[in-house]
Length: 432
Image (cartoon, rainbow, N blue to C red; front, side, top):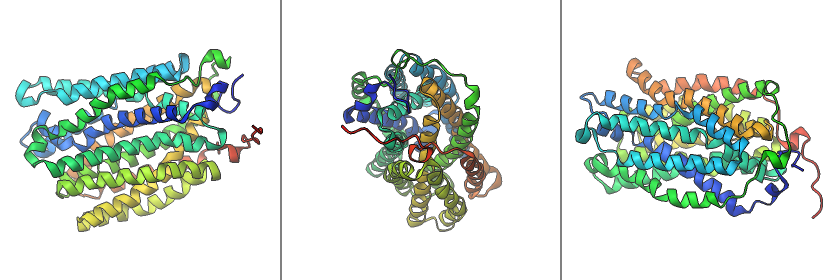
């Protein structure tokens, strides 16, 4: 008999903390590998896409970054549905293995000066493989966390999906900050950025070992459930796409802060990488807070209230950064925006995951998430860089974010409440 709230077999309720940690750490490593490229985009551009125009080199590098988003919906379909057909565990192992191959290959690709045109081809190829792997990572891992959680704590458990992403941002920022302080600009350009990738590659065998020992939280045989029609969940899927599109634009504008500070505001590298550290800290501090609050007060209010504050503060924050161009302005504004984005964005993936039945949960979440990310995550940084170039207005990222935020807020208002404490799903727990 399956759990009525999640469709998971009874063993899902006894998943030990070490297995939850294995999923969390593996997910963090995958996002570290994928996002590190963004933080070193300037140096990667000079290495693989040299140009007399630094802006052109950066834009080409960002195009390669964006290429990693193109196959994410395909990965969502293939690996996400694998999680619904043969289980969450094999899907997670498969995605992690592919990511390990891609990050190692990217770190070891010779420069354009060494092998010519083959270098950018390899970079694009490894970014495509990274995108495919990560596209299938979110669905199985989030489904696992929901199914491993007691109903009254599903928000906290599922919030670890966002928490691991921000942990990856924090670690990548700390690595970048340390390298920027330890190495000269030329050393950072020549080989320093590769160190950040190789650190991630070195942990891959450890992550694989952890995932191989995971229990399974779902199988068709154990639930006995038929695969439902998608039509009744069309509204959930559309709202999920809008919510994730808005949150994705917010996340990748914030992730662009390091490159924005270096390339647009011409601030020192060490200060610029400190913005990434601050962004990671705010996410690590407030993602799980957001998940816990959504367990207590519901998903909708925890999404909506910070989203409104974010809309009010995004333009003033960018104005302060651009006008003063100091460490205090950059780091203070990043902290405010990062905190509100973490509080508002975390319940989105929770709401989407628990709004879908278990038999289509892994694939549904993976496909919706990957589609939104591919469409907007892969284009956001290139778009805002291009907007700054065309308009000459360094506030262009704020205006782009504002439009996305308004769409996201409208979608939040249109959602139903899915938290057990608000939806009536949460029944008194039987005595042990």
